[in-house]
Image (tube, rainbow, N blue to C red; front, side):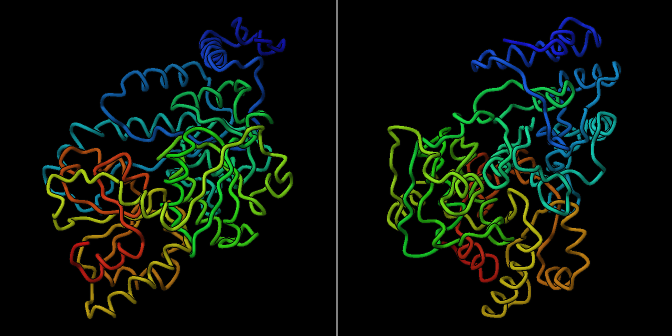
Length: 425
């Protein structure tokens, strides 16, 4: 790998043994993917994926302590994925015992480490760090060192920043040393599309379902999507960005997509159009039948498929402020239609702490609370990792949560019917 004089000096130990190890690790990482150089991280803030104080993560805490002791803290302040615990989320005595004594027993210690390394603030725990209420929205062209898949695909696709799908810990290393290896989605060639996705549905496709279909088809490759602007328009407004948040998370979790282009909508597609297409691109046509086929092929992993749901999670990735407002209206309307006053399934809407603070300033907060819906900053994935939680029949409209846990996926309309009316689908 070709290094600048400054990079070589860091590798040679000019800024200490610890930073030299960090640089060596990133170089080895880059060489695996054929990187020929390192480039500066230019984003104002970083985002880390590891937010949870799992007892088993001893080596992570040791590494963090080495960085803190040597003074090699992040060159940028950073946000981090959601906290794993919230006393407001329903859990029985045994679940809480496992959470606090066997799973996340080092949460306070780890959060103290994060603060010393450069955490933005005590509320910067969310997978949707790019929300205005959080304050970590990169600019077009920024080079990032992020690792949360749903945030990486959003930053690349919707914001036009540049970031690879790094692993946890690599994210903080890039931020600490200030450089990342140049390969993949950082390069012009790596951002070219190898798939054309033609949307031919008769109605606006469900974001999570469409993202799932595309992710499972293209896996880690870059799709160029034609026909979605018919349903989303050509402006990246709040509603569209919220749709793309959920859509992108599904492409990234059901596949390994780190970047997508949408014709006439996303920044690079607007600027460059079909010049973003590689040679010999493959084509995938998505119509109503294809989406229905994808949906029906999801495995049901509940022990008893006919179980009555015991919990509903919405917000993986975290919900936007507008989503919270829209869902307040939906839940109220659903309850009115069914003649009920409160949701019939314990339901948790998750969002960034900053988003929840803004939501509490509106009259929607009291209205939503009156329906029985709980709001939380929690990470639903971390909740579901508890073995006792995994045995519960949990429902969700998140394809990411469905993919990584035992939660069962339903469309938004189906979720609304179940939590306001009850019954089985």
